[in-house]
Image 1 (spheres, rainbow, N blue to C red):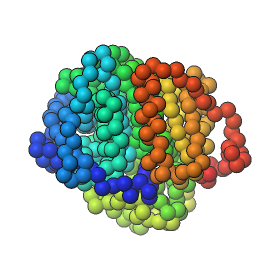
Image 2 (cartoon, rainbow, N blue to C red):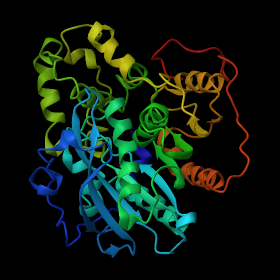
Image 3 (tube, one colour):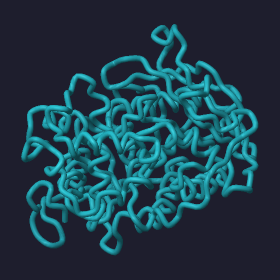
Image 4 (cartoon, rainbow, N blue to C red):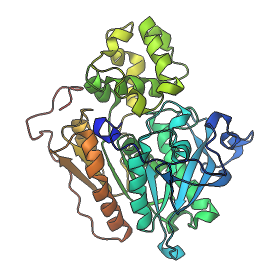
Amino acid sequence: MITALAVAFTGLVGAAPASAGGMWPPHDPFYAAPVDLASRAPGEVIRARSTRIKLGPNIQLPFKTYQVLYRTTDRSETPIATVATIIVPTNSRPATDRKLVSYQTAYDGLGPGCRPSYSLQTGKVALQGAEVILMMNMLRRGWTIVTSDYEGPNDSWGVAATTARGVLDGIRAAESYEPAGLDQGVNTKVGMMGYSGGGNASAWANEYAPGYAPELNIVGAAYGGVGGDLGTIVRSLDGELYAGIAFAGIVGVTSAYPDLDMNRFLNAKGKSLFKKLKSPKMACISDFFLSHPFQKFRSYTTVPDILNTPEFKAIGEENKLGRWAPKAPTLWYHTYFDEMGSWWVNQRVARDYCKAGTPVSFQTSYIEEHALQAVLRPWDAQKWIDDRFKGRPFKPNCPTTETGPFGPSPPPGKGF
């Protein structure tokens, strides 16, 4: 979930390769799941192709780039197929020294045009540009990158299980894809990174990894701008400048719950809103983040507080952070003045991680809001991941108190 300042960094994006032509994913046969999908193993590569990414409309980057369609699993345990983009650095390294970074972009989308496998080729999603620059620096370090369409084929934004499995199976796919030059399992060191929506994806994958993909050698996870709790995010953004993000987030999460009858909760205005947010012209965060400034979600619903219904309480519990403690050393950075109001939630989760034995460095900033941190802090995260790859000592920094710099915890959903 990137906000205002990050949108200013939107001009540098990928364009279409000759092999794929930037075809709209629903019409591109490469994205089609095979009929025997259920018989495939999680992370198994179904098909692959060469592609290209560009910086800006005319600068083709000199990195070997591939796309792989692979099998993963959604929140309902249904097999699904999604795509990962694998980018190989130009400087060659011996097999024993190859490192893989699973970089989760903040693509925060409700439609196929927002997926990185498409937008890195076509330049159709503005927010990819700043992240391409970050990835270029990782490639300069000699790291191979895998970046997945972790929301899956139904674009289930904000759904923990689908997202986490999509990330982890994307790592498996990259390690097993021979042209990437990696070994599978423990022989390849893996770092995970992401910010905002990509931070959430990395954090969920970090929690799911010990149980879902224990063979992966994740040596470190670095992420920031995480919204650790759906209710806190929605309540903090509701009625504020970026209320459109909260509204779209509800659309994204509920897309993974086909048995949930949203018509029960939406009035005519709300039904119109949902339809608009799902349209191709309003599907990506750069489209909707300023779409409904200062509006309250209750004006779109048939109930006073949709988050307080049993259905949405259950959804919130299923998609919050802190359900399991990860094993990988974790750098978690967050600004106290985040518009999503998640600092208190994240501090509590990080403290629980530490109590469970996870080595955590929880770093708080007091000089930025959400978007400015997106610009400044990921470079430090890369240095931290580099230290984990090199096996350097890591000193945890665990939160120890419920009290923040300006007093005790505020009521839930009241932000900072």
